[in-house]
Length: 351
Image (cartoon, rainbow, N blue to C red; front, side, top):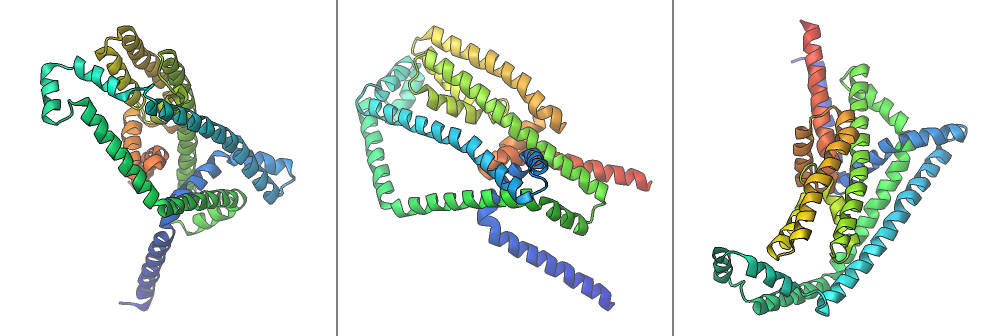
């Protein structure tokens, strides 16, 4: 075996080992790193405009972009969180004061069930509402005791979140100001041809922008509609439910149905037919129309991915990576398609 070959093998092994070690070290903050990349891709046009306006001063343009994003996203988010906390506190007070009697709601559902279902509840010991309420109260006490004895851990989790958020903002700034130099280094050491690497980079950026844009617009639209409709139907804390509508709407096809379907079922089994049918109409017709019209325009048209692939990869991404999977899933799918297209083009060129 020649020495150059052994030297090449050694360099490759050391490169893989160093890469694996780096990934292991940064893994606790891989979510912050990922979202910093997402922000840098989404707000790159704003940074380039500010760079031209500032006469090419990267630091000024990067800091201005960071400030604009923090103010534009941070202030509305803080106001929304404060409003949610107020509604959650009011809802909790209503439950404690029995103005919202969960036991009564459960009782209506149990009374409307067929005999076989009631027998199943009896065999599970869930037919006695008083004992069920006692069980819930005992669980609440245990939960409060758990929180009290784990305050240090909760505080550390809050600190870790704040640290990750700070890292995300810092890396966002670095990627804006030094992204061109980093991209040149990647191109230098990449085994792909420059045009192939450029095609993958464009696909990556396009899918991220389309997914984020589509997710934000869909969440805002369906969340606003859902909150208004549930408020009109007399559901307490409509802002809370509207935000939940918006979050679930990020899951294609089935997201919002996870919320409106159980509420509509409750209305129907308790005799509130018009409310139940109205909510079913809203979910099946209105929300489905919004999803079928807006999502292909905002996501599918730019990514060139079929709706079935977007659905499966989004659900798989959420299962694997949590909230970040909403973006990671479609990105992985688009990169998979793009790489196979490059492979196919290379195979045809060699024939």
